[in-house]
Length: 172
Picture 1 (cartoon, rainbow, N blue to C red):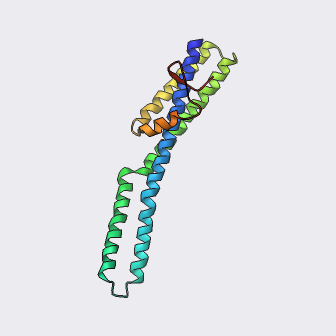
Picture 2: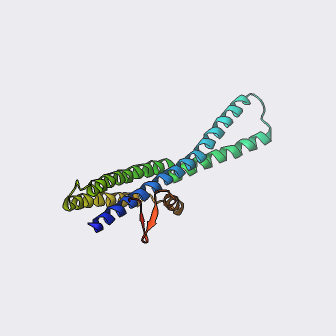
Picture 3: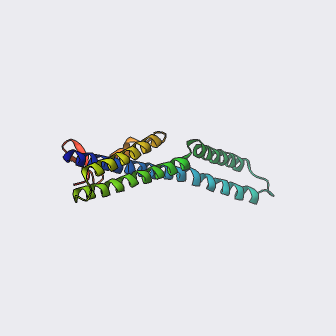
């Protein structure tokens, strides 16, 4: 019975960490997307406005050079955004975070039912196996969208994580 509680605590904690890491990564990619997308749009709008306003006038050479530099900058920013595909990464990390949240929520309910003796050991173990399988499936999906060390460290700094007997735990 105590081992089953430890298994539930461990799965809950892993799901919680997975959720936090992926939400952190989604936030980071949203910043990257905005940092490359918005300036590119603003530069293109500015260039279009300035060049169309000055089309009837003779344009000095230095404005041509500034326009060329700004065009190159806008193209570079757009290229970064396209190559690194920030939008897709953001969406996938957000979805993975939601999937981990589902596991976290369901394992928490299972743990509470078990602690209140509303679920037998066999029934709880069967449901644990189901959610552990789901967790493993999510891990496989997430392999193409890794998180970084900062995402993990940020998740560990959460007030809900505490160290117990050399293992991480959230549930009491």
